[in-house]
Amino acid sequence: SMLQVGQLGLNDGHHEVKRNACFLLGLLYLNMSNQQQSIPSLSSSLANILQSLKPYVEGRGQYDDMLVDNACSAVSKIMVSIINNNMSSGLAQSIGGSSTCINIVTSILPAFLQGLPLQSDHEEDTPGMS
Image (cartoon, rainbow, N blue to C red):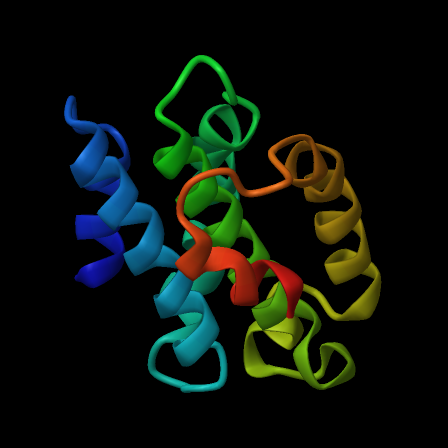
């Protein structure tokens, strides 16, 4: 599946592959969170993907700025997919409803804020500000 491709890409040795994996994962969550056939895999992969993105989001100065920017954008898109429609998206309901969504977003927020402001990939500015 595309989720698996994205997860594998996050562990690749090349920064460009990691950046593209971040981009892919962010778009998958943003665009598929209300599609019934995608919700089970998005839901079951969520914790692992967020855990895999965390080092890049927190890695300003350690990783390529564009990789950090893409990781921040992916986290932003995932947060939007969770809280979209007042936490009534199919994904939000699948992961346990509003209280679970709030817990996930608040656990991601400190790392996400640490990666801001975006430094190099300004095409990612808009998703981070959504």
